[in-house]
Length: 141
Image 1 (cartoon, rainbow, N blue to C red):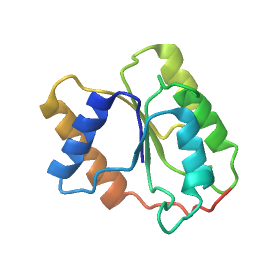
Image 2 (cartoon, helix red, strand yellow):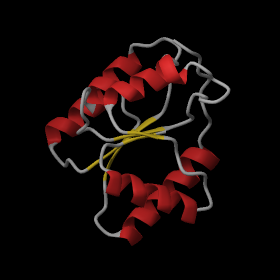
Image 3 (tube, rainbow, N blue to C red):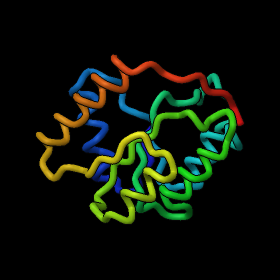
């Protein structure tokens, strides 16, 4: 699952996933939509059509609810608190980095500027999070 409000970043990230021979992640563009998806509410109530993700790529600067607010909400949900979250953002601010880790982010990555560096990052994400890492059990909150 990708949570990012910048359509250009979403396009580049989805393209990098396809080039890595991975399915592009389901993308939402604001924090409230991310919470609705994860909670299985409204349009996302059908878990057959909208399964829980195995990994969330989360931008911090989002409309409606910030990425940090989404992360705080997520970690308070008994059935979802184990969901691996990789913060993928443009912020290099120590306050953002520290707070993300305080809220139990699993990783904090700064979006690379070049498409080649982004591709390398997505290839590494695929190797670690999709192939090597053992996924936790999740359930609807």
